[in-house]
Length: 162
Image 1: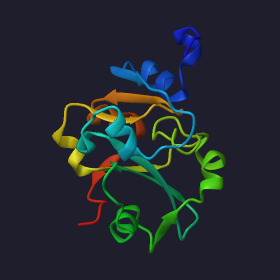
Image 2: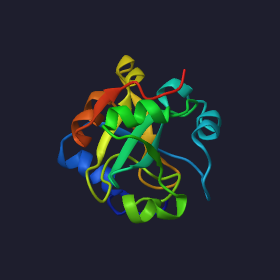
Image 3: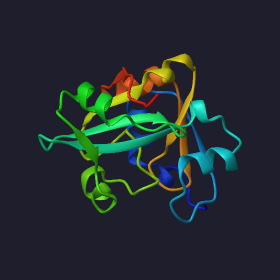
Image 4: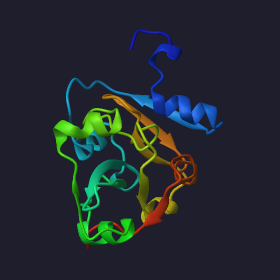
């Protein structure tokens, strides 16, 4: 990354630091969007602790964030029920940066433009450490799921298919 550490801090890292939350950063080569499964494979990380961040919009127009294992698919019916919506759908890729402040592939639930209701798949509570995006391409944050829940004011939920 070349620059000094403080210059490469993302908004997510600054928020974690401010809240005195322990985390580790893993950087990897990445020029463009790669899905979470391929990143986990590339870095030899288990899928079950590697989480992706999906941003949805409900019928009401409110945004919701869902954090789930990279190899799982969100169950939109379950997700809508958690959010108290009739239905939710994915935010269009072209709108991700406008809604979150992050780009596709670098979207993390921490430090979005607003604190949206955030739901983390319940399997996260089985692990001491989970992996989420660091807030830019080629950067991961490894942290305790309880710390993630606390910093995003989130909650655990059953949000995946199957």
